[in-house]
Length: 152
Image (tube, rainbow, N blue to C red; front, side):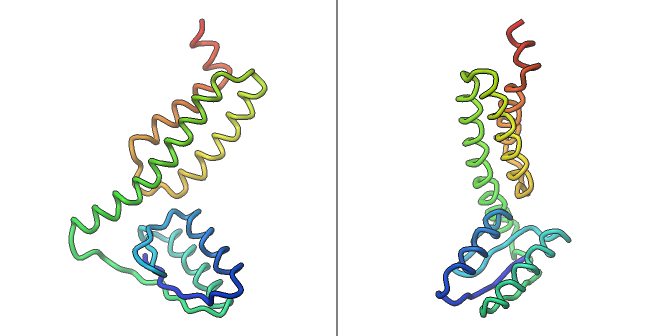
């Protein structure tokens, strides 16, 4: 799925809002005003909503079904999207490692926060990198039951 769009520079708030929504979806930026997501019913619905929002803000938008012309092109796009998620998983892993040294109450708070962050990343993780499992294991290790088993 491709979303091609243009938005007025001013006011900037709608443009910023749209960009944040696209970022939360995990789009691949193909060019200025051109983003891509794997095609499925959910991504199409999200891009249609965002296109409507762009039109309502005075911009132009179109949602397209597209197919890369080569397997190499498709692989590059998937690798770009996986690399972006891998960086997010590495950040979660770093936070989980830092949380291991916290007291029990702080570790529980960190566990809740990191689990919520993993859920957000999973929603935009179309091509899971190896870092996904590593980050999940590090967050799971913060759970008190897991911690006591480890130290026993």
